[in-house]
Each structure stands twice: as C-alpha cells, then as structure tokens.
Image (cartoon, one colour):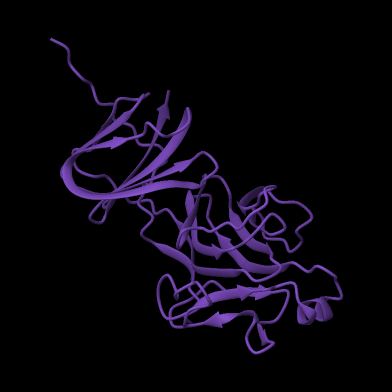
Length: 281
C-alpha cells in the first residue's frame, strides 16, 4: 500500500507570528506611526490633473483607498511643478520612511500599490538598508515593483500586495520608495507596514498543519485540524504570485501554471499563520 507523507516544514519562524506591529503608514493619520518624508512636497496642480498627494476618493481609474480613509495618489508626476521644484528635467518622486529597530529579529515588509496605464518609461521600486545612517549611496536590497522594456499600457489589476521577508540578524531597517511616471497614468499607494517577530509562538502554528508533496509537479495539498482560510504564494523575490481563499481543513492548490523553482507560501487559519517553502518541478 502506498502511503503519502506530508512534510512538516516551517520556513522562517513566523515564529513568532508577526502580530506585533512595529510601523504602519496608511495615510490616514489616526494610528499611523511610521513617519516618512517626500523629496517633493505634496501638490495638486492644473485643476487636479497633476497630483502627488494624500486623498480619500478615487484618482481617475483608481476607485479609492485599499484600506482606511486615505491613500497616496499620483498622476503625471513629471510636470512643470515637480521640474521647477527640483530643477531636474525628469524628477523622481521619493518617499523615505524612518528607520525601524528590528532587534535582530525577522520581519515582514508589505504595502499595496495600484497602477493604471503605465508604460516602459515609468518605473517603481523600493530599497532597503540595514543600518541607521542617512545616505542612500547603496542599497542592501532593491525590488522593481514595476519596470518594463515593452511598449503598451500596463495595469496592476487592482490593489497588488508587495511583500518581503527580512531575515534575522539585522538591527535596523530603513526603506524608500522611488517612482518615476510621466503622462496620463494613475498611481496609488497604501497600507505600508513593517512588522517584527515576537519571541512567543503562542499564536503562531496552525494546529495539525501539514503540506505536500514537496517538491511538487501540479498540486500542493494542505491539511490542518482547523479550517484554512487563505494562501498567498510569493516568488523568491517577494513578488505575490497569487492568493486564494477557502474555508476547509483540507485543500488542494493547483500550481501547474508556475515556473519551476522555489516559492514561499503564507497560510492563514483564523489568527494563526504558517510560512512554508515549496519547490515546483
């Protein structure tokens, strides 16, 4: 009789579930505690056609904030105002977030972005440095949220989550978001969070959790003693590949469409979270 063995693997000690919020910025002002600066002051010019500001309603084809009352909206960022303020012919818009003390613990960074109609001349990326200095002469980590060499208009298909797991061993982390955009295109940013792990695993593990096979060819099977609600899969660069929702103790996820390689998955069951790695053949 053939028996299937599910491999019990916890990738990074979510650990320590990341339920202790360290820093948050949703542009709402009420409970935001992650301060930031902008190299170009917020503005609204040309009857609101050139904008870089916090706002609580839709921005053209972006319907409104992902969460809370407000979000950061941008449109036609390379304009006469931004050029005049910076003295540059094609200025980048940069948000620089204050340093967070990680205490050498693992942490997760996430935020939401939405873009509509951007093209190959536009780009969005964020950078991390693991120190408490002020310069950005180099970055320890850079991730291109959007960049392409192809012609055409590109959309994020709604609010997209950007996620990155910061490994343990760093005392500090600071972040900046760099954006260049020119023309009749729409941008939105919301829900920036940097969470550090706690040393307690009281709320971490999903009871009876298992998964397999690993490596897998076409299916990833999940099992737990409590219903699993959500799975989010990321590639090794931290880019979200897909998210699926359910409410079942056993769950079979198709991964046939994924390219071969390693992936990370965050599995949620109520207030409990497991983070795993799996390999697609």
